[in-house]
Image 1 (cartoon, each protein chain N blue to C red):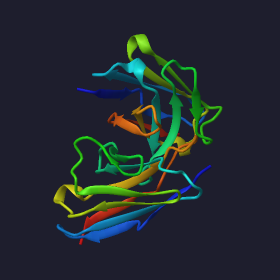
Image 2: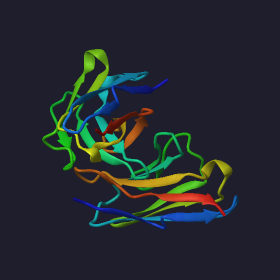
Image 3: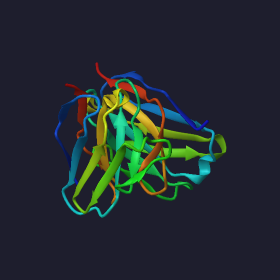
Image 4: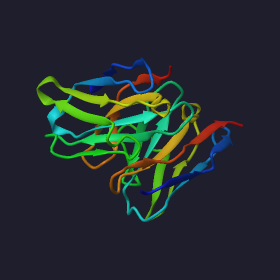
Length: 118
Length: 107
């Protein structure tokens, strides 16, 4: 079964940092680019970041550029999102998603919740 | 950046109804559009890619059409499992963006 499992979310203070992880199983992880997508309460999804299969191409949404860093470890079937200088507006459920290699997301994890609050 | 809009924001319908949701892009995106379904407490689920290609396992009552800037998602005969929120997403270029969603609820 193809599966993505996120972890690392929680309560963090404004200005703080958190690192999210996503472990993939059921498919050859190195064959796909990966995305992070977030969803604030009551809002539509917001694409956050993309990393290509070999990490050679990385893109970020404007709202997180310069503060978030995406990386992956193909040997460990793992995707990461380092989130620094967090703001209240970063509060959301963060989903790890498999990129189809065309730009749409064909497999999603269940998400991990990040709350930025003092 | 390309902005996505959807209409209506909420749609009240009954089982068996034909339902149509519209998604518009602020500039042309060819066929690079996907549709997702999301139920409360769950992650989005891919329904359609490339504007009209049905994902494996998705019921044939779902269909997509359009190109350029205007797209539609149609449910030919609404079933109880279809009450959910639907989002469109463009993947023409980065940054990708999603529409604000259309909630289909019980009339």
